[in-house]
Length: 187
Image (cartoon, rainbow, N blue to C red):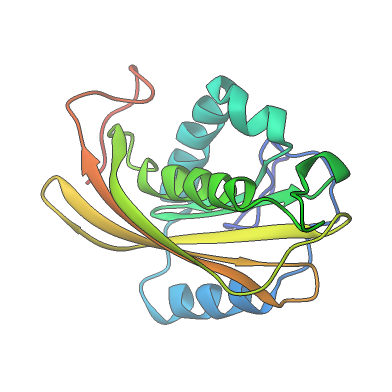
């Protein structure tokens, strides 16, 4: 069960202490943007957290890759993934597919905080720097636009030193179902 504290910084029950509590530069910039905009209410944060925890419970792929949900709010998610030796490619750097999976997972959690099942229409990722064994990657996802059924979500992935590793932009599409059946939808 989640710790009972307030704010978007609350850790979900899905997280184990990974040392990811320190903010990366990308995370701080996104949080500053959120603060300039309207702050989500405690109710909205709790709602997003409840939806995200239900999603994480079913997300076997994320769990098997070691992806942890560390923060969530309306249209916002922060996830981490440690890089292990078995994730390295022939160049002794993290295979891009793992980095993509972290970005795509953070995208999914940010896009689904409204409890409206949202999937990817398409995406683009640009790799900026290699990740190596022992790195802890952090993905900060933030919905940039939501109009009707379609949206845009940006994800910045950094390493433990705050160095940007990848930038991802995804287009989302809302379908006619919910993540948690007994919760309402929030638009």
